[in-house]
Image (cartoon, rainbow, N blue to C red; front, side, top):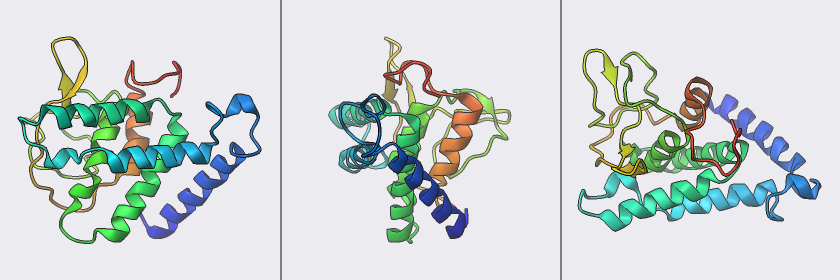
Length: 195
């Protein structure tokens, strides 16, 4: 996505958030926080969560911390999360212009957590990025990867990441596509109907 379009989307998102910020009715503010505070909270949760691309298979505690952060982020409205994704992606793309695009792994996992990406999708779906290790065959790709379900039906981080190849991960484009195509993953929102 061009920098002009990304900047325009950020300005539009900021205008939308400001319209729900300080001047918002109390019923439009969650727990007394403005939408801008919510975006800041999501950004802080993203930055403080462990980088899922750096975890070992045996690091159960850090894997749980990733899922806990995702669960806490998911309690926000999608427009707030999207603005945070856009800001985090822009920040990483400005600061990380090397081949180490794993800096966006937190957003990759967040998108898979928030949206009902299937474990078996048509192999021709848009990829938005290229982590090594995504399970696929001639017909299907596991879009939920690196997440899966444990024996109790809870979402868990099931896999380790490989290297990253290609263009930077298009996190905001993936967010929009997954939201439109697959919708919100059941059980990941504090408010039912948040699409």
